[in-house]
Image 1 (cartoon, rainbow, N blue to C red):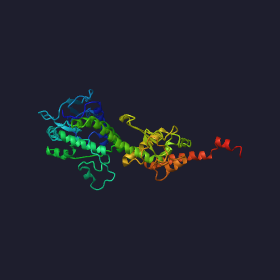
Image 2: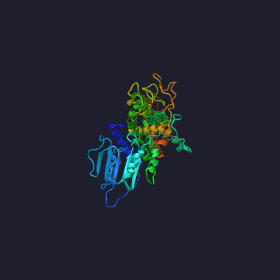
Image 3: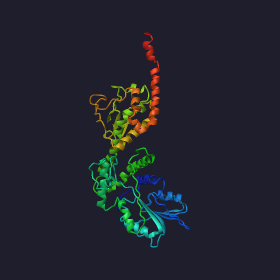
Image 4: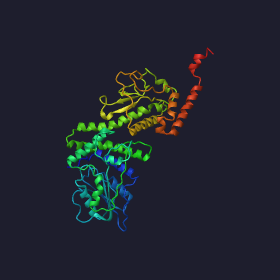
Length: 447
């Protein structure tokens, strides 16, 4: 067959995530179009490529009097328990539809890329023939184009549609994947990017008042807008599922080995991981009060004590601020960071928030790692360690945390930094006013 996407649980997961992402892009709605309101009869809706049936079932809940039919070439992912106004059929929409008009009010077409549609224009022509006068069709796709808008100026939108090249790619592995999809799809005669041509096809087959709507989605949860962050988080999950769902069959049929394709997927994830690590390293000195919040915290962070005292990282380096655990000492899927600065006296919610905020800042700004990794046997704070020294006391850490240009203010905002910094200033004053047991023992006989 020509369908390259699987019919397994990974594909089910991808489709469910995709459904949630579309709803976020549509502000919680199920369609961008305003559906017609028939009088004296139920609304008639057709969902082509029903997948898991999530859209049809949600539509049935919103329109309990409508008659909804979902069609898909496979029953593998279709639900068995459905509302009374929904019917699912196993059918190939490429084949001729019923001889008699179906008298549809609305046709929903979502994400049919992947080889299942031989001729999109012919599919739209059949939909047009079976719609009532005034009926509507809505076509929606996730388009895998990777853009960097950091320095976009006039003409950026035109550049985004230009020929794909590796030159200047901000995330080279992601661009390589995108170019591979385009090349291999053309080899197999599959249109993996029909969206630019959809409006023309719809007009050619007779549709009137064709409208386009697009939405940019960040590849990770970043920025300050809550809606954009939620969309980014959903797309991040979709990428994790979709890379494998889309790539293995497509790339494999064109001669690329499974191991090479999986290596490309890992490199895509590493592009993000590199920026994430860079963000943590750049911001680490500015968030120390969150990771080491007490006077006593800094008694641990001293040289020659297997403790992280500089902005440093290294593969399996147990004294660096960030220990990278990755192949060959771990499986690729188990690659991870170990943030070694924080101690047992921290608030874990603050630590996690700091790590995520700094990491996403690195991804958002495409930061590069500021210092080379510490090699095996290299000591933290030695002459070969190029990282700056972290704060030696809570006072030093809090001064940097609360300064005007602190990265902490950028990622957490002034209100939080001023409030939390104030609590640390209070802690410092209490310490400065305290008379300790050491002082009593040391000086009682000399005073």
